[in-house]
Image 1 (spheres, helix red, strand yellow):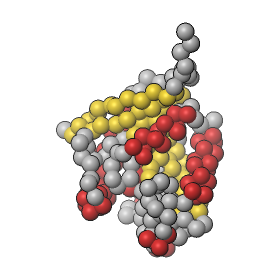
Image 2 (cartoon, one colour):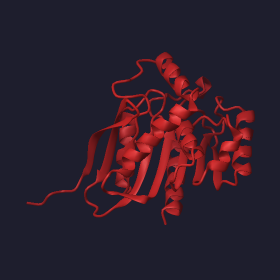
Image 3 (tube, one colour):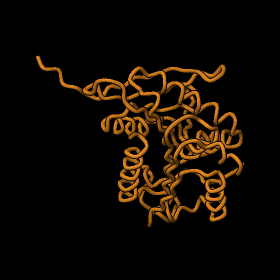
Image 4 (cartoon, one colour):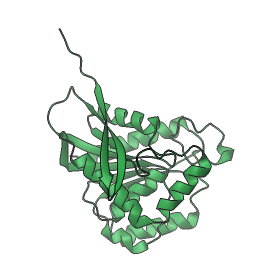
Length: 244
């Protein structure tokens, strides 16, 4: 009997301090040996099927993908008001945010198929903000990718702690990141001597990779298939560079 390889998935419980977190890992069992690991950080609604599908897509590319849980096991916002409050809690407490995402990074490293010398992190919206904070914490990884994340720089000197390469994928018409925020982020990257890229995708607003975000740019957040596809290709090219 021929056994066909497939993308395998598993729920992983892990902890940060006294808080239990529930992550999700995906890998391709057709491959043998260790391979690069990619941490995936969710948007403000928490860990959903969206991030799990992205993890599967990363597994198809040959990576072990681990979806981190920032909010905690069983914590799932039921609406945007709850999501905004939760995301605001962590954005307002950057040390806690860094602790939570660092716990996810540690859980990824513990996966037996992950090459600990080849690690990246990606994040969407709130998750994009989070992976930038992970980089600012001085985490030992090869690179981070922010998809339509918040681009403020609350502690400009933190750029000096960044050891990895940074790719920022941003909707050129995103109304949620002010020109002042973007300028501050660019200054942080320059002053920190970071190897960074900021790619602005024309015609795209916030949440341009989110399939369920609708198509009305006037709302400030909308899916854009072209920007989604292009940003994914930019990520793949970035990974090809950092994992050589």
